[in-house]
Image: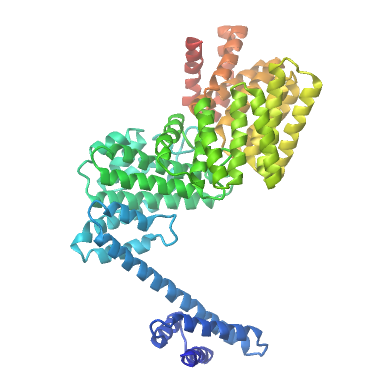
Length: 595
């Protein structure tokens, strides 16, 4: 047989050199005709030996022979892929047709699970639908696949056009004026996804929406799976290809995973009581998306997803995952998702839940030997304990994180640990009323080292945190001039990184520094921005900025303060829009009423 295959390969090479092979398809046809069933490995070995011999040949004809052999190799690989795909489709057919009606959603999800090595592509799904049409038992799934793919085809041209519509505030998925839902709802023909997109555009309840779908057939559910998965996958691919600093860059990839997982989470909750089959399938869809997200090399262990949500969307989306994640076994992916939940809870001012998430993530990360996730949670815990005013605990955790980061050679974690250590020590010194120059200088040295390391790493999140922390250190140690210099450098970096929380906090401390310098115009400007940005994402820290505004109102008087606001109207509208500007008086009134 080896001689047979050697002869076959030589014949194809010879015909190629004589110009008798006009296309690669001819090469594949000759391979198929000459190949006997079950002997593919033997053909592959003969081909590899011929290529190895050609690569060492220095004759004039050798390069042409090698190109011909490489063409044979390429077509052999294509043939193998086609056969693997055909085998996969046959196995998929068998599994789907053998499953009971209650099992079919689960079986279908296994076939399209992106975490599996041979997940079916859209093209494979088209072929599967054609084959399922021949069986009465497979027609419902076939209809769902075909309708879902047709829906996606109708939206593919509008995939990212919503990014270029006039918007207010941060770019993201929240609300009719900012997300894709309203635009997609107008473009799509199928009533089921059109209704879902309308609910999303109006920020309605998907759980309530499911009550109108109690009679939904399997084909409709499969349609949603195919359409939503295709949209999510395509959006992530597009966002990942954008420049890092683009407004539609990596952070929108993160948000895409979370928003689509959130949709399936709500569908699961809505169907739990009466449609167990669809509820379980929806729960698995949510987990597939979250696992895929957690496996990314750039998973945001240190923050950076918040600019892509409106306030309510952020709070709802991240809160929804806390319950279902308790049902999932402890894995590396779960630890990373709990880390995200932890720092999101900290951002929203919920410190005890944040600690609970981080401590659970820390234990799982240790058990699964995820060193990067382990040290990240030490860093996050340190930050939470500063906010809880437990400064010694924060210092201890920062020191542990610093030691662990240096042992592991994790420079990003080291930068964050240095910043946390300096930040913790500044607050500890202020609380102990020992704001001596030695304590402050030591803390600032840690912060400066962390900033320098973050800049070397090119990590904008850590740079924004370092600038912010250093500016706060200067502010509370009565060095407002130095604070302004640092915070003004940090604000655009926080904006570029997409961390809306640091952006708002940075503006708030800039306002305090300018107030200390008695530059009241600048103080008003940054206090309003900090208050607005933080309140929009649901962070309780907005009240700090609102408190400074109350002081400024008292100092300038109502008339003088309103004149100062009016003079800056154009700049406010440029940064936060007309709606944002008009929302400012409501915020400081709300602060007054609650103080």
